[in-house]
Image (tube, rainbow, N blue to C red):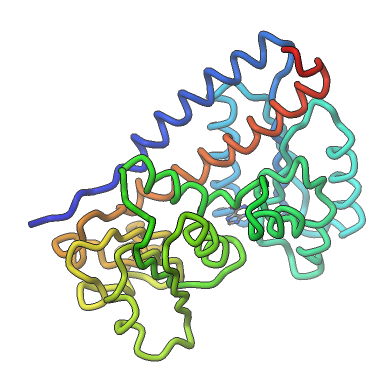
Length: 290
Ligand code: GUN
């Protein structure tokens, strides 16, 4: 028996329609949500991601501003752009596409973004608030995975969630969000010994390690929900994930494909965060009676 394929494209589309309705309401109140995206250098993958983010924001009715800077831009110049956007009332969300060139300190750049406009959820203030369960912008990929689990009625409470990967953007916040929803969480990573002994215990297995088709049927418990965050190219140049989809799909209870699983949800949550920021700014501008 094959597992259910979790359709991130369809779920993302429904959420983006909900976002568009709320954007229209905001516009009626004279507030147009604005997202600014900064991309540095000419890495093709980064430019593709940024184009997709821009296109999606325009589709839901937001204003989109793209700032393209050369790889030679100085840290001071980049920080100046961020300061201007922080002060610009027409901008509700600021995103600096990572990675940045080596001469620029990523942490410094992230800290320079006003936490109220940090729609990536990377600022230490938002990360800290998230960990102690306060309202905060959530990192878009883990937030999107939570929405995928919710909208497929996947039980989280009491379940064993195993996260493979411990990045600041995905693995670490993912575990925290699942913990808040009463999962028992295990983190695995590149130094974990006997990885399969952990992954085989997972009711929910989240894989974010950036290694092509690394997780196979032997790593997975029968009926587990498998979420693949990977975005790699196989030997034929075809997009694929960190999970060997063909090997695992017959054993998993549900599985996300690559492409078409987590990816569309990440962009959708970026829009959701930008909408939230714009709603807060609009209340501040017009007063709470509206
Ligand atoms: N690079 C890869 N993923 C992301 C992301 O979610 N946000 C930003 N800003 N850069 C990225």
